[in-house]
Amino acid sequence: MLQQLERAGLASSEEIACSGPTGRRIVYHPTYRAPSALTEWMVAGAAAEPVRAELQAKLAVARGEDIPRLLAALDCYERECQALVSASSEEFPRPRSWAALAMVLTRAATLTRLRAELEWVVLARRAIAEFAASAKAADCPAPRRVAARPARGAAGEQARALRAARR
Image 1: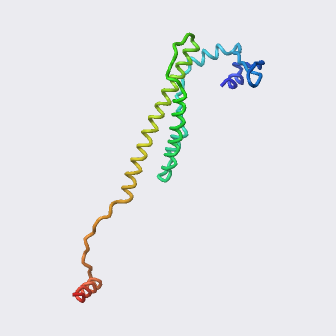
Image 2: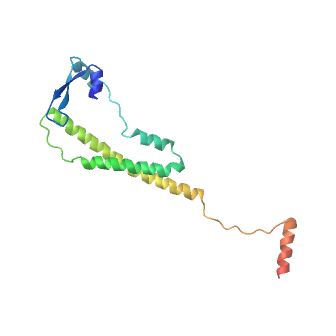
């Protein structure tokens, strides 16, 4: 994001020496155009972005034979979300600055989205399993007993003759 701001002329960067492992750090500064661009951006509408659109796209075009692969993708996504939730602290310290408040609210939004995604994974997995079970039942109905009908015509006469001969 910082590189995009720099390409747009809204930020500039400089490399400074530091005592870290690389011995350097890149520091970004807003340009003179940044405040007015920030004001414009703040009043513009915000588009809602899905967290994992690719997974929903796969679901939308999947075939029945893709169910095992979809379930595997859901399992993987669930593990990723769960790891992110586990790595995040539930504690939100009382912010002492505007920047700290922004970070606390951003973390809270991320945790809320991750929990919602985990709920959706459970719902999707259950719905797929129920659908697969009902589709399997519909494709493979239980065998029915069919009452034997007496054969007609020449075949019927042959069958009656064989039965009579057995008696």
